[in-house]
Image (cartoon, rainbow, N blue to C red; front, side, top):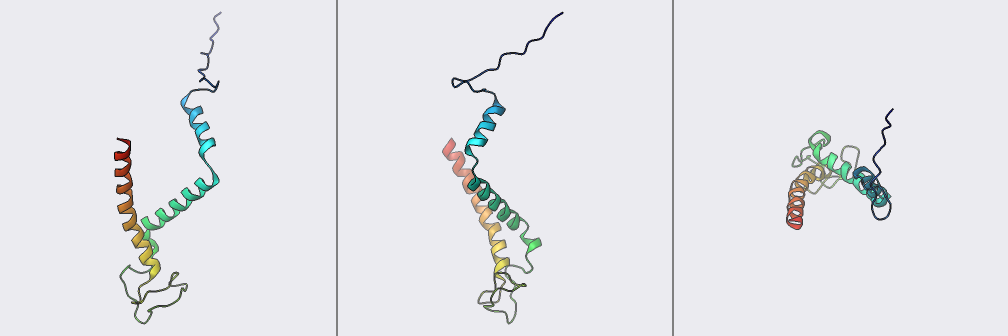
Length: 116
């Protein structure tokens, strides 16, 4: 009867397993901190809000509300209104879309130039 033996585990100089998944797991446990998780979570929330801005915002970014200039925050206008009567919350959400559309290509280009 033949017995199958498993191949010996490849280990690095420090005696740790050198496979991809163990290295990834070790990297994850060494590098992931609560502040990283918090920052990534906030970034995902802001990105989600800006992506879905047309569905979330009650008013258009340039829509004026007659008689509502310089109003404090209310349930209808969470960030208040500006001097012309535009909803600041809607403008922030729609402005985030523009910011991301500039930031993502800029960071991607900088990464390609920096790595290359």
